[in-house]
Amino acid sequence: MPDQRHRGLNMSKKVIVSTIPRRRITPTSSSAVQSNRTAKSSSFYTVKAMEGLVTAAYSEDHSVDIDLESGVKLTRIPVQSRSPIGENDDRGFGERYLPMVNSRVYVDFPAGPNNPDQAVVLSGFFQKADSLKQELLVAGTESIARKITEDGLDISHDRETGLITVIDPDGLEFIVDRENKTISLKPWSDDTFELSDTSIDIDFQGNTITIDSTGLTADFQGNSIVADSAKVTINSLEVLK
Image 1 (cartoon, one colour):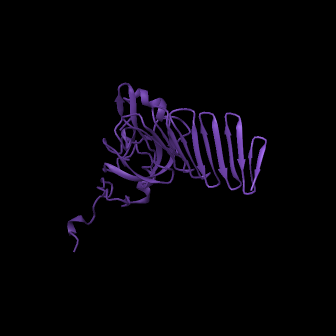
Image 2 (cartoon, rainbow, N blue to C red):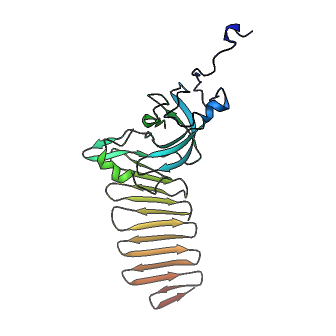
Image 3 (cartoon, one colour):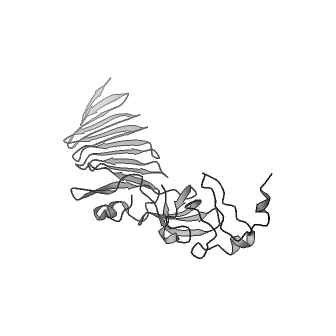
């Protein structure tokens, strides 16, 4: 039996709400919700974290807009980095990884929900890594997760197109283009190697080779070779089977 002393409880008192994942915050009345739509003026909740839905993301300052389950709308709430942020020999390292729109996150309110300006999305911070800001805090890159490691390896993953890029600080590039079904390797020079579902293309020190379903085409400093199922042509010399 419920404690009879709780009958007639004044429902204008603050309600302690559980922060168990996906637990909804239950207001005491619809009128209370309507009068507490703005977090700054609300004293309705005493929780330290709330669940919400991401409605917009901003890569230029690593923040998001969130609709809390309570109905409160928050804008430009900073998102924690998933990895340490800092500098190593004047070179910044860290990771940009913004929650995608329509994903669910938890918002921490260190000073309580009456102070949303101090809220942070639980998912470091970029304030002290000035050399990294120009690399990671770039407008228009919200869907691209990018990480720069302590040794300078730059790893990007476009979560919309599937494009994966790995760049070594000395110039090596490795690219996986899932949309166009190609794999490209650029060594520590201007040479390239590209593999797709239709061809292999190699450019090495000015020499090029292409292999596809029709055969092989190669150019060695102006000396060309073309080979298919019927013949092999070397410059103007034709060799028949």
